[in-house]
Amino acid sequence: MTSDNTPGTTGVHLLVPLKPLARAKSRLLAGRGSAGHVELVTAMALDTVAAARRARGVVEVVVVSSDRALTEAFTGLGVEVVPDDPGDGLNAALRHGDEVLRARGAFRVGALQADLPALRPGELGWALRAAGTDRSFCPDLGGDGTTLLLGEPDQPLDPRFGPGSAEAHFESGAKSLLGPWESLRRDVDTEADLTAAEVVGLGPRTAARLFRSGG
Image 1: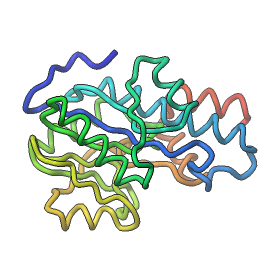
Image 2: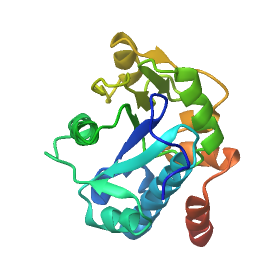
Image 3: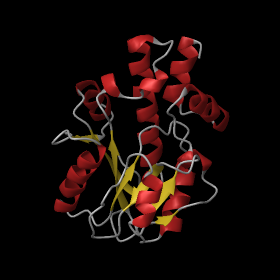
Image 4: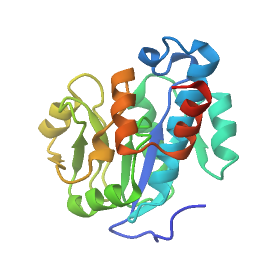
């Protein structure tokens, strides 16, 4: 099930890339053990995608991953999963997903990071409206990373994620999206990030996972 938005010049097809769970979010591993860590990373990704699917202006959300457990979790909720091909890192995965969607006729493609468990659909929708049809990106609260990248309509996404991605996307001609959308900028890499996201308000799966584990 997707949002009630319809395809068109203002709608965006969002790609959400996900590493294999064994290699995801290693800085959140301490104190939880491998099983608890996997459950937390999965919960954060599920909450991120669920919120994005409800945002105005989002036509569909497609996950890019070759992790079997993640594929089963998302397809079970009706979310399409495109295999990570050729499995050569984040930008390669996004370029592949972009090619798949544009070959189907997607007019505009974007990329959303999967570690936004406090994401609010309304705030993502506001950012999409602020972007208009321009190539745009939303920096994380630290100002170095990128949580959302939007390609221009009918043009390749051209992702440049990695250290210093905010500057790299700015230098690629993307405009910076700065506005009242803290939940879109609050990505979670560390325990401190997770604590800060709790203050904003975590999605239901992430909140339930932390409640069961006592934090």
